Length: 139
Image (tube, rainbow, N blue to C red):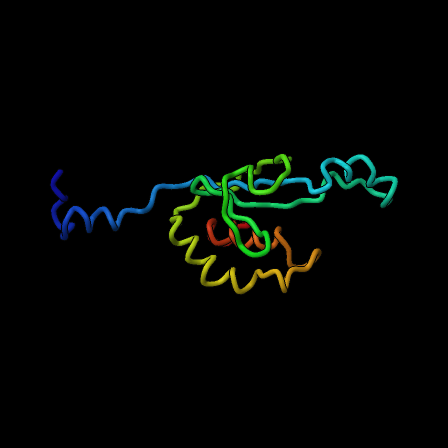
């Protein structure tokens, strides 16, 4: 097809200016207690806790998660637990390449095995950072 008048450039340049197709973004939430929290938390803690989460972000047919550092794998198979919940977070116009560059450039420094903290700097914080990047600040 010819380019519209005034567009200028080649077809390849016009294609490069088009926004990337949207990709779904989901949070895969695993219960690291495998149901124990839901069944015993009221008795043990005095309040109901349905699960203790490990979270990975699924985009571009990959799951991005924190192991001993930032990792990527097949959705639903990144840790040896069943997915407890799938949360639809929306769509991203970012590309896989942009996400993986962000992870390499920033998150590999911010999220390491050495600075992991069970409560304050864990897999859920990593997943939140990935989701915020993909969704323009909405994690």
